[in-house]
Length: 467
Image (cartoon, rainbow, N blue to C red; front, side, top):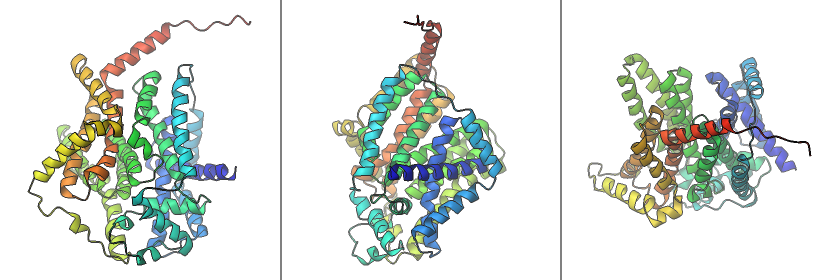
């Protein structure tokens, strides 16, 4: 019971923290989107606090960390009245529509989520990239109150995991101090919040029956599901990368500045989790420029939008990679040496693209990794092209998934260390939420949803005779 109470307290504090960020950005959403997004932003803020304390050489004791978390949460809710109004608005407008046909989906999804959460709680961290990097650093931080601890006195020349960004390390430290020896409970909060956000994002476009089926297909992607309880950077990175693009597209539709500010913050978090995301952020900026020029946006406004989107990512990259690794860590790590010295030899680029398709996406091994989700997407895509005209929303999601599809071979060409069998395999998690939103925006499924709603409207209300 004490563990459940601790999880609830931490989750509420994360929600309150994230709610403060959304309040400062002036973001108002439906409760089903606001609640999970606030928790995710709260987790992201939590992940930065121990890192900032380390930068200022403040001992990482339990008292220092939790007092800092409380002070940060209070500071982000400095507009207290607005924050309270936001929360009141959230609960006032929250309503839970429930129908009998929701039960099968709820049972299946709840069972899958329960197994993931239980494994996070009950089993220790196992991935080698974690146990030779963030996990061991976090374990010794709890003992030595310093992230730059005796781990760096060991010969770790066969790995570079000790140089990974401190996102996981910081969260592991917090949850270990909270009484969870394996940490990693935070990953279940990321997983559950993301699923809730996705489901309600789908409901904005399609019927709940179709949305529930698509969510089951998404949750059942084997490799991606495995990393909902095996802690590494890729699942969380995919979550925040998707959220950034989601609000970027919202900005392109409404041109509300607060949306591009939030998109920039979310992309910065994704970059903090995996540093090569900065390259994707640069590629996305070209799309932002192209869309602005097509709509004849004034150049000063266009450049301001690009700066609001890209600068937070650049700043967090400099802080967590260049400054922290070069000026704080005792071990030397030459990041520039990871670059491909033959950038204009495009044989590697073409080979990466070929291997990604033949080994990972369209192969028997690919089905073992990602099940049939890609083929379900392709079926909807083909039907959409045959029977219906593409709409603006579906085109945007198609651009986003193509960015990942072509972006990973490019990044593999620039950084050969990001291999096919590990980094690219997990990096492709980014593409699946975009496939999901494309299907939800496809004219085929929208028409199907409208037919279901029309059929529902004609169904007679259930009659009870009192027996």
